[in-house]
Image (cartoon, rainbow, N blue to C red; front, side, top):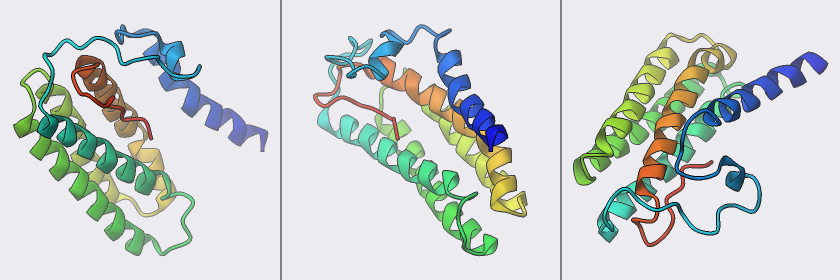
Length: 169
C-alpha cells in the first residue's frame, strides 16, 4: 500500500513541481489557496462570446476525456468495450480542439494543436494497449503534456473572456 501511495504522490506532485518552473503569468499558489481573485491579465484583446464558448467546449470535452482515460485502470468493464467508449470520447475531444482552433486567435492555435496531437497519440496508444493498466501507463505523459499546453492557453486568455476559462478537471 505504501508503494502505491508513493506512486500516486509522484504522479500528482511531478506536474505541480514542473509548473513551478514555468512563468504562468499568475502565482501557482492561487490554484490551491482559495483560487485567484480574478483571472490574470490577458495577452489578447477581449474575445467574442463565440470564441469563449469554443474554449469552454474544449474544457468540457477535455474533462470528459480525462475522466474516461483516468477511469480505464479502475473500470470493471471488458477492455474491448472500454476501448471503444474511450475512443469515442477522445475522438470528440480531438474534433472539439480542431474546431476551436479554426475559431480562435492565431496565438492560441499552436498550443491547441499540441493538445490535439497528444490526443491523437493517445488514441494510437489506446488501440495498441491490451488493458486499462497498460493504457494508463502508456498515456500518462500525453495527459500531462496536453494539460501543460492547456495551462498555457488559459494564461494567454486570462481575462479576455467574461467568464474565466479554466481547464482544471
